Length: 402
Image (tube, rainbow, N blue to C red; front, side):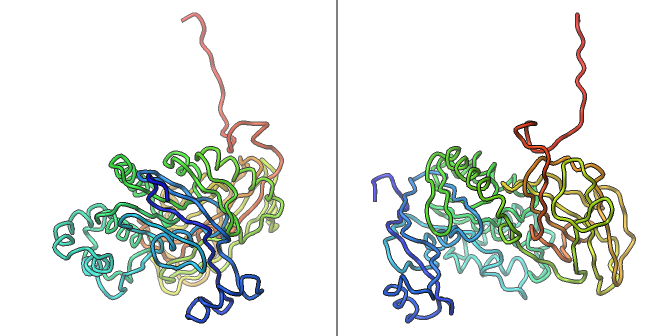
């Protein structure tokens, strides 16, 4: 381990038996059966170092081994082979809701989660108001966690962690679930930690955020390092990889998450052309329709239906919902369908993940949220023919002699 390094992995292997990683027998067996077909290798001889005070990104497709690396750094998992050195106190945000008890309220869960993280009770008490304020949850202090949306749990968990004393902050993809205002506030907070010399390690599909924040980035696929370099260079390698593999892209490449209290459920989502035919491939400028079939298990007042179209680098291109567009729905009850229609699809060639959701009128409580569980492809005009990724109509006008 080099003098300036704070984290190092040397020839790290970790595998999962098809029966799981629950026993000492599995752990020992994996060490001696690396070539057995019943072992699924999440990491294969991974070696790299993270420098003290560095913002370090980890990118790659789903199933690459990104979260496994974070769990190894955080001491949640042990490798089957190899050496891991971590010099400093680690705080990690890896999985939503870990350490929360659904029957306890927000304040009680702050103390519970703080105890799990090893934070003295007096420190938690001192920071209690600040934790709730940063999370934007002061008015929900006494609400049981089971009624929180995933976004609310994320905000609370993140706020607790950033109020701990740490040398290394590990953040997984969870920030993609937060609302835009909270994500902006969170990244500003992480920038302040970076200025203070803290080491921050981030896994994300949002390449623009990685490029803006990280000094170096590791690109991983199927448990192997394909690039580790300055962030811009690593992202270029990843984009080349995505372009090369785009014809083989399928739904599981963009598989996301689903959450909500299920008082109203999305039963089926169909992507249609202008004639009402189901389709997954569209031409630039073609009519594009999203059909959401739902069932409300009780009368729900003023629901909000929304969609989000994502670029394959993770950023949201467009996220309209009925509330913000002023399309007020008095109530829903029982079965129904709702449609969102784009007369002229302005997207350039590419594969686009799609999210759909039903929320309450204020877009706080999720009834059913399908995050990047669908996808469609656009053909016809590439970004080489027109700069950018979206065609926004406009006109130039010049005034001379002024």
